[in-house]
Structures are given as C-alpha cells and as structure tokens.
Length: 116
Image (cartoon, rainbow, N blue to C red; front, side, top):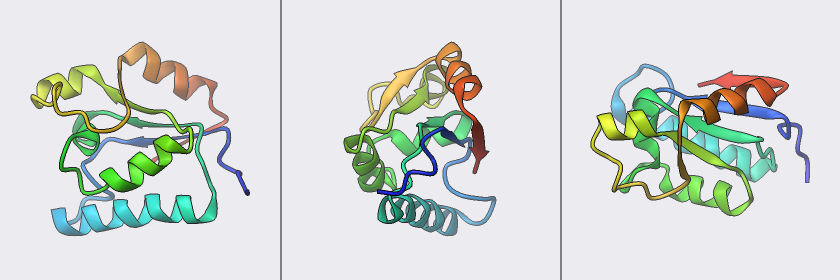
C-alpha cells in the first residue's frame, strides 16, 4: 500500500471542501476521502475544528468514508470546544473528541499539514 501521507495531517475547518454551496462542499469532501482510501493514502491524522467538527457528527455526509479511515487506523480528532459550540457533543459518530493541545500536538509532529 502506498502511504505517502504517513506523516501528513489533514485539517478540515469547514463542513465540506471549499466555500461552494453546501451540496457541492459535501460531494467534494466525500470524493476526497474516498480517493484517499482508494489510493491507500492514509494520513497520520485528520483534525476537525470550527465548522469541520460537524463532519464527525451523526448524519455527516462523509460518515461512511470517515469510518473507513478510522477502521484503517487513522485518528480522527474533533475539537471539543467546537462540538460543544454546535451542540454536537452527544452526536459524535466517528473519531474521538480531542482538545486544542491534542490538535496542536498532531500539527507540530507532522511533516506536512494540509488544510482543506
């Protein structure tokens, strides 16, 4: 398996990819994660904060793809403050609830950080 992303952390700070309409943002983030899985490009971690924290909640458009990444051993870390702000603390469907020190730790330990 090709794993050029082994020391890369991906950051999502929106509830999808880009700043387009919601339907397109969701379609793009699904395609992104599906492509990573198909190519075997597993990142060191995926971090979710601000609006991105919504993506780990029940009903997320990319819940299936995130569950597959998690099953493949990729840590999915969502910001506790953000989940609390959006009222999603009890709705986390995939990944783990983290805090800012954990997010900063993952970012600083990575060779590369990609913000989507």
